[in-house]
Image (cartoon, rainbow, N blue to C red; front, top):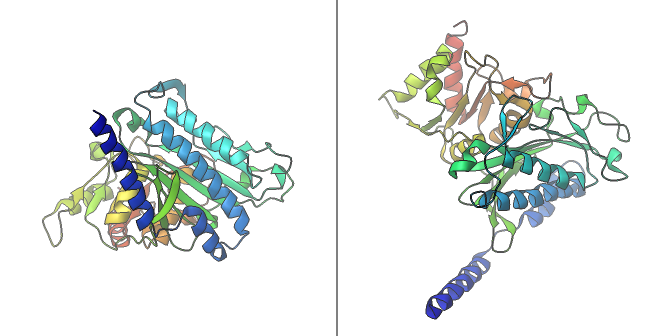
Length: 357
């Protein structure tokens, strides 16, 4: 038993030494400083924003990793504004991110998928002078927590359009996706990663849990123009528009480089992350039960669309560019086609052929 204990200690030391000796990766903090000229506003503001998100992600990661042994899985007993049953971790993650973002004098308002209305930040004396609003899906795919499947956080950052020093208004949040100054997601999986963009490419950072630091592990991510994965909940096939049904059949035909492989996790972050790395398309279309779509434009589609486009991909609602849609309400839903550019274009062709069906 003593020998085994010595073995484990040596293994831990060897791993840590190897990580540090091979670690030519830059930390997330170092990367932000080096790339500060890419952010057209104050670099200090971006640093504080990302720092708050980084801190909150570590806390959420800790809670996610102990979900099976702590009393934080299952439903709360309440529903969110969308009428969905809230998971305990939804509420916990929501509170963690709001608390972290509220303590930095850079955010004047937060809108969350889990809250009915936006939150005006008044945690500090100068909060009303802050220039940014954050929209967040604190725990995407949280229904997967109970079965130990990857989940994520999605965030979107805008500069407010109303005058700093005045109360934050709804119009500060209802901006087109092209107005985002930064967007990203955190995936809590076999490793924990932050992937984000400030409009100058996409970079991914992996958390080293032994020292609690994010390192640049995926620089300048690019989505393959064509992939071999399509991600859609085919259980709802009967409810899909005819264009989507025809595209699925196209993916399954034994022609050229097809059939494609079907992969669907049920967590937007996880499905998109895989497809961005390997190449593929993610589709959450309108259905006969949800004619406007199911995913939220502001909390999910806009930030993922900005990342996809910055990585060379494409996102639309089946007909028009996601980032050009003018939001009319906080919890607005839209159909979502996202991923490798050629695959999204092909899906749009099928949608256009069946525009009236």
